[in-house]
Length: 273
Image (cartoon, rainbow, N blue to C red):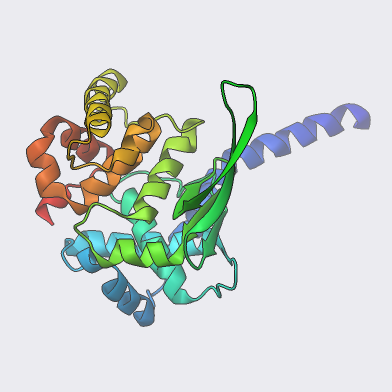
C-alpha cells in the first residue's frame, strides 16, 4: 500500500509546487517592490539616464520598483578587471526595465547573468565559405544577448548609449529587446505579443520597413535606423526599439504604422514624455 501511495504523494507535491510557484514568486516580488528605493540609486538614475526626468511620475515609480526586482533576481559579473558597483547595476537595470513598463512581465525569465566588460569585447566568428574552407574573423562587440541565460555588455558603450538620450543608439535597449524576442525561442523579430495585438499585422508592418532598410543599406541611402538592423528581422526589431525610445518624434513622423505597433507592444508612448 505504501509503495502505491508514495508515487501518488510525490506527484501531488510536484503539481502543488508547479501551481504554487508563480504565486510564491509574485509574493516575493511584491515584498521587494514595497521596500524603500535607496536614495543613492535614484541619484545614479538621474545622472545616467537623462530621459528619466521627462517620464511621468507614475512611470518613474514603476521603473524604480522594476529595478528593485531586477537587481534581486539577476546576477552581475565583471570581466577583464571590471568591479561590479551599484552604478553599473543601476545604470543597466534602469535601461533594461524601461522595456517592461506597463506590461505584465516575468522580468526576462530566461536571463540569469549579465556579464560586463570594460569596453567593446572581442568575439571570434567562424563561417564556411563557398570554397569549403573554414574562416575565422574577430568582431568587436558592444553587446550580445544569448538565449541561454546571459547578456554581455560593454560598460563604456553602456555609458555612451545612456549619455545621449536622443541619438537612437542604446546597447542595453538593443540587447534586452533581443531578450524579449528570445522568450519564445530563437530571436526572429516576433516577440510574444499581447492578445490584443495581431501577428499578421505585426509581420506585415515590420516586413515592409525591414525590406526598405535593406534597400537603403545596399544603396548607402540615409535612414533613421542603423544599417545593422538590415542584418535580419531580429536585429531590425532591436534597432527599431532603440529608436522608439530615443527618437520617438522622428520615428512617429516617418514610420507611423511601425511606431504604433511598438507603442502597443511596449505599452508606453515616449512621444509624450
